[in-house]
Amino acid sequence: MDARPDDDGSPMFARMQSDYSTLPDGYELYRKLLSSQPDRSVSIISVDFVTCLAQLLKSGPDKYSPLTGVELVRQKVKCLYLMGGVFGSAVEPDYNFGQGIEFSKTFFHLWPTDVDIVFSPDEVGDRIEYVPEQVIADISWTDEHPIKQVYMTCDCDTGQKMWDPMAVINAVEGDELFQLSERGTVAITDKAETIFTPSATGNCRYQLPGDADWNIAMLEKIRNVNKTH
Image (cartoon, rainbow, N blue to C red; front, side, top):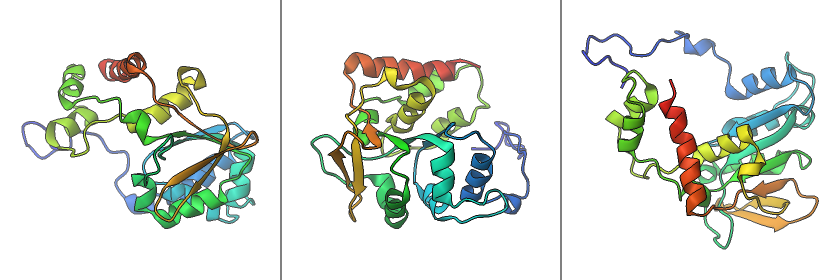
């Protein structure tokens, strides 16, 4: 994917880092960044697995902060926008949580109950599909684009559902674009099922699936990013 079209062997994309062994672990980078921010000012977007967040919550004081990970999150984080979960009438395992179930259980156990989480569950992104042919056409202004190269050279057997972008759009553009559940709490089972319990004082909400017009509008919002260069 990274070779230039003429196969001369030079990288297509510039690299700022050559020695990856010098980079901090993900949870350490979280600690460094959070410690320098104003209190209750940070919104975190989490897609894929929650490994780093679990490690952050388990972390102790270090050179960046005298606070534990739980204390640091409680002091600095305003809201977590998290891609994951299956809600509504279905009780099904979540793929991302299930791939690292012990980390996921740690995350759910330790995340502070006074810091909000907005879940973007599978059933929202499932209804929005950005097919590879359209992605390639929308990035017509260049071939040297990492997203375009992925779609030109790789196959994905899960389809091209827009799960992750829903968490990003919610975090960046606000709750007004979404229908959200009532407040409650979320627990995870050993099978990676997410169980929502309504509670007026709960810190958790989840996005509700939109209708056909809303799905089209969300897809157009994502497409417009790719069309802009």
